[in-house]
Image 1: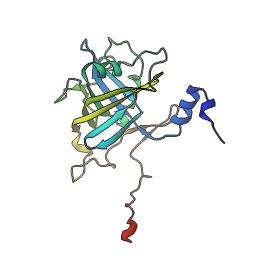
Image 2: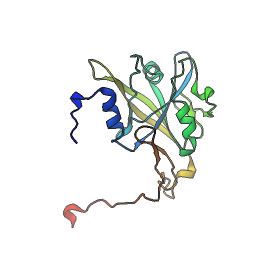
Image 3: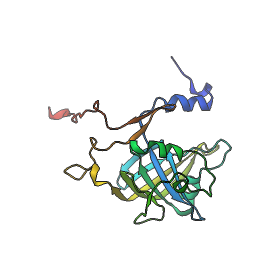
Length: 208
């Protein structure tokens, strides 16, 4: 089957790609508005892009009516966000926060999600998240420039909070202990902890 994306409706293109580029980690992003409202929303267009400096990217889509998501507006306002990772146990709460509540409603309060203060920045973090990354927003770029469908937000990771129960003996996150949610296509989700996971040593290359 050949698919020419120049001939495909954008919604269909989204469905094809979102069902193909899987699994995707879920960033549960907390921000705070100019009025002091703490927002919480999930995004699966999310990835680490470099470790020097430690930087992640999220890409919130522009809403169907052309307006910006609260996360984008808040990130542009004060340049701060917390990226919380989502455990499988918190799937229902995460899903509820994906609803488009009005900007004056805090998803933390609406969905009854426990909060914890951040250390270096204003936005609250999810208290029960296994990992929370405090980030400084270094850029928020509309894409494509002529008719933006999303904003690519780069966040420099200033600090991280780890639940010690997910760490191994070397004090690093243990894939066997982390049980994070991953996004698939449509209504499908996955989890990072699985008996099907395996290790693979890096190739020796010319050292053979």
